[in-house]
Image 1 (tube, rainbow, N blue to C red):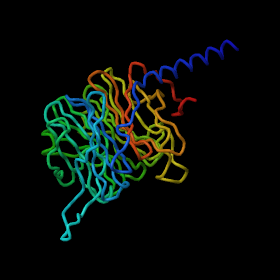
Image 2 (cartoon, one colour):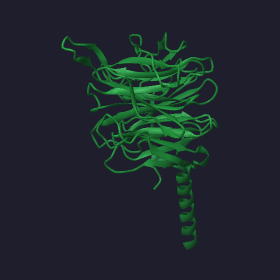
Image 3 (cartoon, one colour):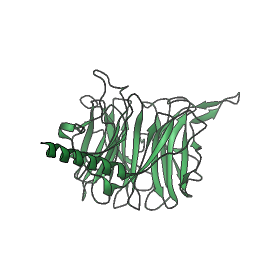
Length: 360
């Protein structure tokens, strides 16, 4: 028995050591900034390096909240620069009529400029989609323009570019319940089509899908709900039609998630492995922040606890895999900074999660 316990302890230590070794870099994008609060980061790789963006200002929903960008070169992040805001017009007294901005999403197509989508408006149930582009890897940006009526763009998480060149975006709306839909553009955002909602918002209230590539013409999407579980939905025709939206056994405290399909076919998911307090649909804890791994997008294994501090917020992750094979993730840290982590996926070792329970 002693030998068995010793072997089990050694196995747990080995697994934990591998998880810690998988995290190669852990840093803040900035130490100081001209805004007190930040949220909803996004990250992308360009030919000139990494670019991140987030919204920052006095606090979420305040009119002074704008979209800020930082670029990484020579091992350092540039100071944050505001590249978009919600100014609508100047009043006769010279002051600005301004709305907050929300949820930036960066995306680099195989050909064409760097795209930056974001939302503008007084609240998520009243916002609209905006877009700007950069031809110098995020140094300068075009004048933002509004997306067509009824098109929101990717609402939180990065799109995917399909083999034929179309960009498929996971989107959602909140003005008539939490409803998931998908939008696509074949001309870098000039024209769009959109599916109808995939849910009614009644039995499952869902938003903010992330898209996974599951082989051939098959896709899968995962995202946030008010039902204490991450949702899933599948397509077998490159996102033109989708299956019924269902709940997984992975917990979700009504907080944003993100996922990515790796070059080796595995899938990564970053999320808060916890639930809302009983009877509540918002205001739950957003700690810990976890990374899970899957071979098929259905069965998930525990890999790494990225953050764990009771009562604090680690939320709204974004995750990509860069050309060198490394995984880069960013997330909100205490609503005060944006955290950046580099992970070596070759060192990730999954552990089973029976009934969706994170292993002790």
